Image 1 (cartoon, helix red, strand yellow):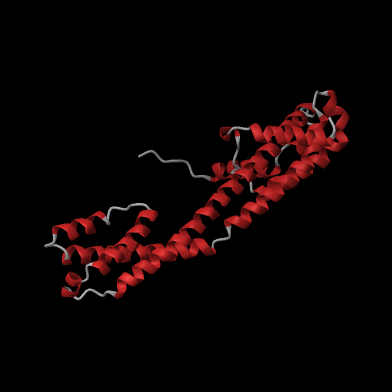
Image 2: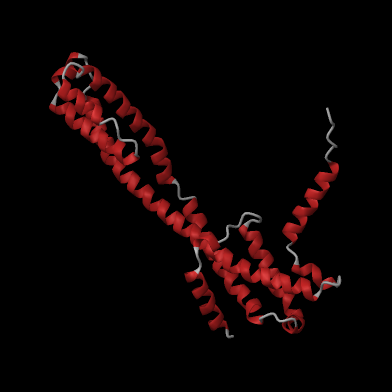
Length: 251
């Protein structure tokens, strides 16, 4: 299989892979995994004949650099979107203020319109929006309702400037939420692409690791190169911690 054929095969595998087949890199940092994959590639080169003799498709080894590069790009793209949080920060700051403003206006409206069944019903209807979009629409509708029916609001000395503020916040938050939604969609897509690239590389690495451990299973010095050093160190630390843990004392 040529390099181009390998790339095409991996692309087809990616396109047909189901969501539940995509793995998430949780056991090792992605940059560390890429580093280990590249080490594995160079480690396996001298063992080519032995690995092929055991049945390994050598095209898998040859695909590691391309798959590592794809994961490097996907990880960088995801991290760039992950940390592009200026809009997220604006939403995080403004949304609570908007919810509080809606609460304040609604409380005033319900008191001011308490003896007018029609206006009271209209005010109560506007307080039921639980989603962000509902809250944003409520602010605009409350502004309209209050400006069209100001007399009873004046009797309780309601600050009419809050109605202008509500309309303004409604417009601003509509744009902010749209941008946040777009960013989050892009973030989710970038993360899935990253996870897919990781899965493609991991499938190959796992196979090469397995063949290498089988071929050199009798304790040859080449065996160590077919074991994840990151996971090996984690297991050793865990064993040490378990040995140092004081025995439990029965009551």
